[in-house]
Length: 88
Image (cartoon, rainbow, N blue to C red; front, side):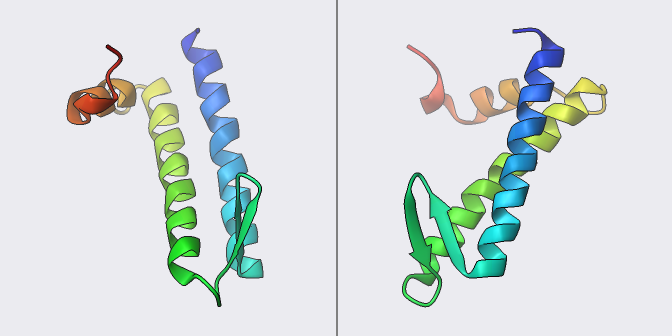
């Protein structure tokens, strides 16, 4: 996959996650993979869902910054620091 296509892909994922986070926080319901979690019933589930979406936004920003040459490759960073995610 070309670097520009990869950057566009992660930018779109980041924007979609950001929009989803804003909707989740505004409504008090977090939706992920077809299930809806209400903040009054399970606040921990809502916080974890928003945290997961926020991590995707941060990774998308890292990929975009890498495209501009401001930071190193985030994929290499993740592979080096999380070796259990490496393919066998």
